[in-house]
Length: 470
Image (cartoon, rainbow, N blue to C red; front, side):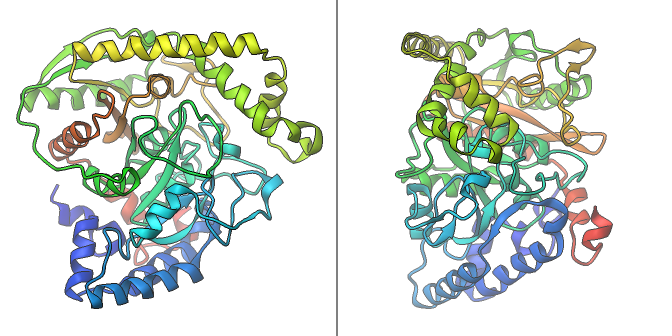
């Protein structure tokens, strides 16, 4: 489908390069675009709960500054581009809740490193997005208010913990969103909402003075409509350039349909298999394989819970009634972790990273489903998939977290629909292989031509009202 058909008339859906080019020509003003973003959120966010805090006044001031920068030729790479910020990133002068009712009134005085880089690049901050408490869950609920909802079907989850972030992109509230991925928290919501999300190599994108959670595994990263936009935003976050080039070399791609033999919904499996066939059509050597991804939780669970105890264990005694059930149970479990358990987990983590890194001696890239199912109904995580029982915690999305533990860059690309709900395919590259990953993702996007028109039409200001959309 042509790009023009996908972007329509709303500039919030335009590619960043197209938006910035219009700003430079004076054909469009950042002030006009931010007013559209505000109007759309005013009209529709009551149906989606994508934002925890709106930043309308700040966004207007940033847009005016961007307009001036374009007039004087001083525009930065993201000048005037509307970007939502997950509410786990401190932003100067804003309430930063970290998704917790405990921090409902917490006004942070300084930007974290991620926010500072985006601000210096000229981005316009539309709001702080809904997140699971302290980013700890793969769905987006907390005790601050209603759950975030999926723009494709508001009875369903957008995933998490960056669910609000993904919803702002899918519903056209912002051009891009910033999330953080400690166990799939960018890729899962990207897959569930039909957008692009990338988790960079662990440690690549710094977030000085940010929230300490899942620190051994987490990476800030962008959620966008397309890989080309993520390339620009990631370049700002990583402070480097990622050049676009068609992947001309024939790659060896390891294709694992069922990592760790976990069940995958049959409809999801069929759509992802067709996407993988496109890689073969593009000239790459696709080799179906099993991958030794088991064992990740022997490091992950212990190290995540140990950090929760260090950073927030006091809340169990001081404010347990204000915590979500998920966080309270996590802090309770964390009390039983001993120093020897942590030492053992670190040894396992080091060995796991080496084990998965060795795969890239055989493959240039790895491909799997992003999730095992499409977005499920709010608060109804599946306990059975394709007739097989699965665990409540990870059963719906077991394929993202192994690459947090291994530290590899991974992206989710929308590849099709099942029952009018989007499906993602996951691409993984070697450590620091973001340029190859982005280029392969962009090639695959063009081959797949994912049709997002249904969700864009659903949230069109000329088509329906918020009540009709819900």
